[in-house]
Amino acid sequence: MNPINRPSGPRIYNLFPLLAGPLPQWAPHFERAQRLGFDWVFTNAFHYAGYSGSLYSIKDYYAIDPRLIDDATADPPMAQLRQMVRQADALGLRLMMDLVINHTAFDSPLVTEHPDWYKRGADGKPLRPSAKDGDKKVTWGDLAEIDNASSPDRDQLWRYWLQLTEHYAALGFRGFRCDAAYKVPAELWQFLIGRIRKSHPDTLFVAESLGCPFEDTVRLARAGFDFIFNSSKWWDFTEPWCLEQYRQTAPLVPSISFAESHDTERLAAELRGDKEAVKLRYAFSALFSSGVMMPVGFEYGFRKRLDVVSTRPQDWETPQWDISEFITGVNRVKNSYRVFNEEGPVEAVEAGNAQVFAFVKSSLDRKEKALILLNKDRRQGQTCRLAQMGYVFNGMTQVSDISPDGQLQHTPDFQTGQLRPSGVHVILGR
Image (cartoon, rainbow, N blue to C red):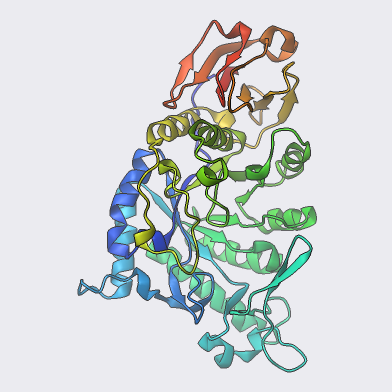
């Protein structure tokens, strides 16, 4: 299998603003992201927050949240933002930011300046957005819901979003993570994506669409998104739903996996400090889909959940471990082979051992393929016999092990299939 010779899927380092602190202090995080082999840095919303202080309750899209401003410097806030963008660009990193256009803070000036932009109840007050969390309905009282579909002032509203997106694209942001994208009309996304691509052709648009029905995923794919996020983080490597979702969405739009996000518990806490199991989940995320994302602190085994209101730089934890070398190695493997950067066919394979999950992933043209074996057992090594996999193993040219330090090591004696606890093996071939 030859190394890829075209752009790879995005490898995204999520720098959480409230943990990173003031913008002038972000440079060391960029340097670390580059060393780890990431080519994108995604920053959650950094705009001026409303009454609740939540990053996702935006009061002013054109102002920087005071918690992210260094008062010790004479540079004004937007100058600090521009300098941050230049620092990332100098390291060859592309910046992605949140684009939150389905709601604003309830105390945003837009609520009174443009009342027709908002959904309103029978009492005339702006509606609060809500969502289902299992059987419960969660309503966000700090937000006011935008009426992007039916506002009587829709043209001006859409122009506002276009000017906002253009503003940050011109500042140097080369990607947008579109928050709750399925709650925004596809026609608006088509409008924004089409217009921005005329002035900034290489801009990446990623839909945050977790939990949305399949028909909404189809709608987003048709709107022109480059990627969606998938739900593989919650997969147990046993139930069929994850591969079924992949097969449904892969022909429409490539996806990005993550082992942890700012919306989830820290994986090190979930797995009770099992470093090898954490490493397995990252390796799987990186190799399963076209893109991968990892939040800051994952490499150090941070356990405290990120919070969009209360997290502060003082929450930076003493590292429980440092798996930077492993992550760098896995990212290098991902970046080196086309099969790991495309949403090609995926097929589960019977490994003859319930503790081993095996699947074959092929490139889109089916000229490259990889057999990936994961030991689900966190305590004991497991064995599977590759010879029993018949056609799957036939023609594979290189048996490799992702070692504890993330290197892809050639292991020609792997016929007996010895997998260490939480071990990952990759067999490459044509």
